[in-house]
Every structure is written in C-alpha cells, then in structure tokens.
Picture 1: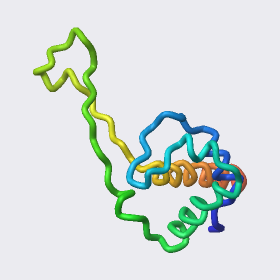
Picture 2 (picture 1 turned 30 degrees about the vertical axis):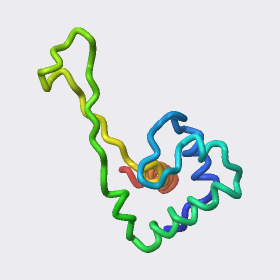
Picture 3 (picture 1 turned 90 degrees about the vertical axis):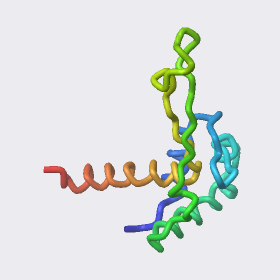
Length: 114
C-alpha cells in the first residue's frame, strides 16, 4: 500500500477533540490542529515510517488506565462506582484513525465487500 498522504492526515486531525491527553510523545491534539502543513508533515514522516517498516514504537503499545468516579451519589468504596478510561498516545491514535479510513476507501472503490 502507498504511504499516507498529508490530506489523509489533515482529514483525521480535523476530527480530533482538542482537550485530550497527549500520551508518551507529548504531542497534543491541539498542537496537531494548530500546526501548518510543514509541522503536520513531521508526524506524517513518523507514521509512514511505521507503516512501511511494520514496526511501531513500544510506547504506542502501552496504555495508561485511569479510573474515573461516576458520580456524587455512588459509593466511593464500590469498584462499580468507577469507569476505566485508557490514555493512549496521540500519534498512535492517528494511525488507528488512518487505517480504517484507508480501508473504507479501498473497499468502496474496489467494491470488495461483497
């Protein structure tokens, strides 16, 4: 498959929620959205390198689970009063967004679903 394009990446960047955790890279969604094409081409190089080498940074394989209390009327000593959220690296989430978008386009163009 061809490397990801800047258009594919910017389309995914536009879909980001601005105030999310950055993960190990320290790159936030807000930074990606505020950057111009020159800045956005830097993570694109990393994502394409990952895509072409079939090797991802080990940090992308890690996820920090954070428990969030559900509400004021719940028993704080009961584990069911909490929900878990997983904090993943921003760039890892980008490749997770690029892959389904690319596969959907491929399936639609080649009519390979049926």
